[in-house]
Amino acid sequence: MAGKGGTGKTTTSVNLGAALSYFGKDVIVVDANLTTPNVGLHLGVPVVPIHLHHVLQGKNEIHEAVYIHPAGLKIVPGSIALSDLHITNPEKLSSSLKKLRKLKPDFVLVDGAAGLGREALNAISAVDDLLIVTNAELPAITDAMKTIKLAEDYKKNVIGVVLTKTGQSNSEITIRSVESMLERPVISVIPYDVSIKHALKMKDAVVFTHPRSKPAVSYKKLAAALIGQDYVEDYSVKVEKKGFLVSLFKKFFK
Image (cartoon, rainbow, N blue to C red; front, side, top):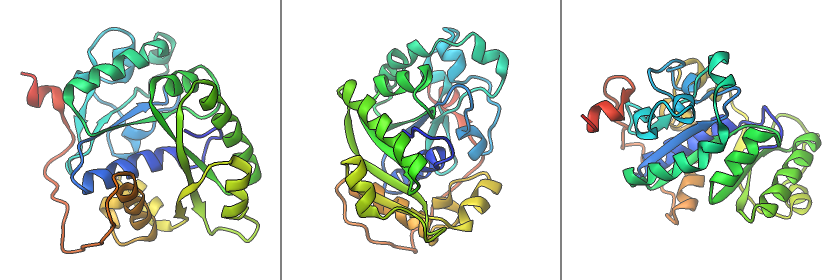
């Protein structure tokens, strides 16, 4: 979660999911940013036949909205149509996510909305644990404080802080200061790198497009830490990618 927009929350959701998938984990990334969903855009599928908004409107079951990335990562995209937003009920998110357990994934990553509005509150309420994604800048840190306080009010476990887009200026707040202000450990530092923009242009995760880049390695180290595995880079391992994003429902639920 991130209190402030533009901190790299969706980039982190997509790439952490990709990194966990790289380690052989079954991962589903759910785009619960209902107002401005970007997971599908990041992966080259801005429009899909069945999406999360359909699920929250009661038109479809959530397993029908799961799609498989060619590299194995699964996603539940949202709708970019404004008309879908007006008739969508975010309060149904929690019950919908519970139904994903039938697919028995190792991880379900929820990319929630920025801010502390209705969408963000429902995303926080629907999950077990939170990662706080923020930049090393005072406005972002201040909003992250509010998100952590809200998570505490909801009795949610905050795993730690992911510091993104680092190394852009000398005026950034130090990691030690971030930890002191947020009273949470910084468990990952994602450096700013042009490879992130290249990956977005290629409509894929930087973990897949630029596996040796600093952000990709950082996301893989974060994934390894979360699963309790030592990180050892093996560039002889290639991610096999076949075809395009396909519907999990059509593949497994015929």
